Each structure stands twice: as C-alpha cells, then as structure tokens.
Image (tube, rainbow, N blue to C red):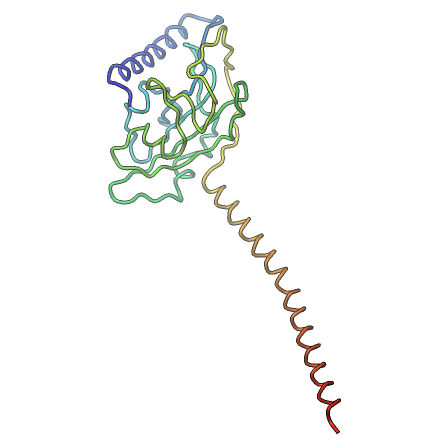
Length: 236
C-alpha cells in the first residue's frame, strides 16, 4: 500500500491537473502539449464523468456509485474518460443482477482499455458490478473486478494492459476533442451468452439422444426375432 506521502502527492498532482485544465481553457486555443499515457480514474456525477482528484486508494465510493477507468493518452488541459454511452451503461444495467449482503455495498465499474497503440492488444471494454464491504475504497472495488498492477501508488495496468510501463510520457500528445462511444459488455450480456450456449448444448444432446434410442430399439427387435426363430427351429 502506498505511503501517506505518496497518496498526498498523487492527490496534489490530480488537483494541479484540474487547475491547469481550467487555466488553459480560459487562455484560448490549445497548443501542442506533452502528455502521459496511463489509466485515468473518474467518478460518474450527475450523469457525466468527473476526473478524480485522488487515487482510488484514497477515495471511498458510496453504494450505487459508478467508477470509471480509461487507458490512453491525455494532456494537462484535456483528460480522457470512458467512451461509454451513459444512457446504456448505468448503475442499474451493470448491477441489476448483483445482490449485496448485509454490511456490503454495490459499485459499478466501467473499464475502457483504450486503443491498441501500446505493446499489448486491449481487451474489449466492459462494465462489472462489485459487491464489497461498506468501507471499501475505490482500490478495493477495482480489485474485485480486475487484475491490477500498481507501482508507486499508481494504477499501471488492468488485466495485463498495458503489458509494461506506467505513466509513460508522450511528447506533443494528440488528444481528440470528441470521441465516439463504443459498446461495453455488461454482466447481463455475459449471462445471456452463457444461457444460449447451454441451450445449444442441450439441443445438441437431444439431437444425439433420439438416434441412439432408435438404434437401441432396432437391436432389441433383431434380438427378439432371432430368439423367436431359434425357438421355432427347436420345435418338433
């Protein structure tokens, strides 16, 4: 776990990023900037993403919260956010099938692995629901739904993406002003796929069963006929 000094430093840098974004926004058209490639952390607030002011280890989401993670390149003036359609990817659609026991809370987590401009191919974007203790931090929640690589208190990789590196500097970073939403896999989608596969297996099993039954009946009839013929041959 990161030391208090590291966490305070991460929080200060996040606040500095937000302040710089505001200043640049007031200063006029943005110029080419250097940036960083890393996992951006956001909270869904009032139907829109808000860039986190602290790292996930220093934030405690409430029951019903939606946490967002997006890998990619950003600059001081332009952070990036998950490319989810927020009319489709909501707390209800993500956590509808998850129950919380007494003393637990449910938190939806949106994971956008970005594009394939690093040393590992990004997994498909997905959203998961975590049922965790009420006092669980954002880091605890993230660990429930993804394999996390942390270095120096910074989230470096989720589910092995990227395969290496952490907060890589990018000179003259190009960040699109707007991005199209992409499809996210929801827990309900995975359940429906599993149901379809099971139904297909059952159908295949039934298709195989009836020919076997038919073969069995033929064998029985042949045996019965042979027995009858044998009895006739022995009759005086």
